[in-house]
Length: 413
Picture 1 (tube, rainbow, N blue to C red):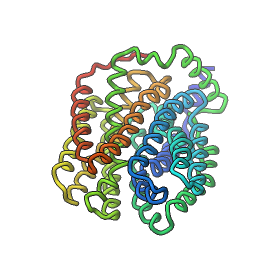
Picture 2 (cartoon, rainbow, N blue to C red):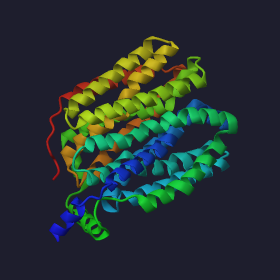
Picture 3 (cartoon, helix red, strand yellow):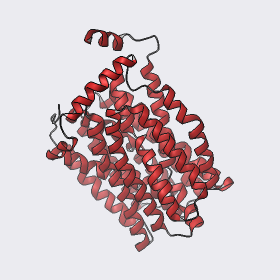
Picture 4 (cartoon, rainbow, N blue to C red):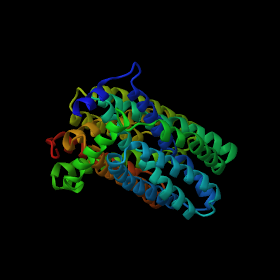
């Protein structure tokens, strides 16, 4: 039986289906972050539609990111147990409901429910955690590179959607924009993932047998046992800071920050496009060297680059600095995922990676939730983002020092 399974896995056709899984995973990231990663483009339209201030919109973002974080942890567990295909299909259905239902919203609380709850469960189910489970099963080598290629979708989504959203919101309004996206997701993406995504190599009988073995391994020890080890808390804290300073700060507040400095929405949209391009370049470069370089050193360097970019944004008010910030900060954004993923795979093992990294990634989204709420609160008190920028600089500098000095060892078999 074991020999048959090995033969089924190792006998590859001329075109290895794993590369199609990479392409589908890229599409999942592109579609998800295209909506979630462009939250800043909805801020002022929602303020105008529902007659609310910036703090209320930050509450929507906080709720969304908090639910997103919980959903990631659940999705990681589900991906280990029922497979990424079903989780991704559910995610597309939930996002479609969120987008189509938003057309009928007449109060900001409707957005909290539709976008903050329903949609955010969909965002979490289609996270990099879910697709990473499939990638590590399909590829024995170059896992870091394949994961980086997949998460390029997380950079490409906001890069394409941000200027597109800005343009189409002006032309048709945000409600009809959501209807258009919701229809596309329902008609195209749900069938695409249901019919063509595969959880791992092999025939159906082999896959089901492997799932049974994996589920037995998962039942052996509670996933919460990882929190008995100090190194887990170090990873969680630094990932919290990572989320606070990328998804929380940039994807929620960079568009209104630029508007507050007198830059046009078109200029800010172009800067975010540059941010996305830099994100792609950084993710490719870091993903390539992740398999060959010390992951702790990589993360330390990436956090240090963020500090430099924030200092530029803090002390110089000029459109060119906005683009310089976009280049530097964008280079570091999603590039952190590959070294964090590989670091966690070494600590927790492949069979539990979805569950364990999902739990750890909750802290990233928990940080992102506060990274969207606290700047909104500070802005409502001071009408600027200076205190927020200083806070992010301090957190990143401390995290760079901490993560550079941790000691790694396998804590789960």
